[in-house]
Amino acid sequence: MFGLGTPELIVILGIAVLVFGGKKLPEIGSGLGKAISSFKSGISDIEESGKSIIEDVPGVKEVSAVKEKIDAVKNMKNITNVLK
Image (cartoon, rainbow, N blue to C red):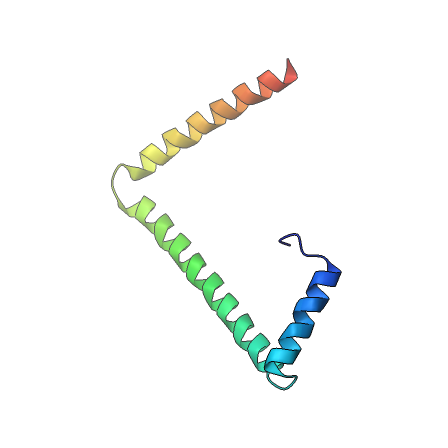
């Protein structure tokens, strides 16, 4: 996780306790957790709307299928190069 080890995390936690105080840290953690979950749900909503666009716009579905086939052929070519 970002190249942080246990000693670095302990120092960061110690600084956070000094700056915010022990009573404020649970509130900050709770708010951060809610923000992360909200962000994740927003990202999943965007992904779902992108999938619906692919299904609704004429021709996009066919282009996506062709792109997947091309990618599969490229992957097969890479595999054969590795095996040589």
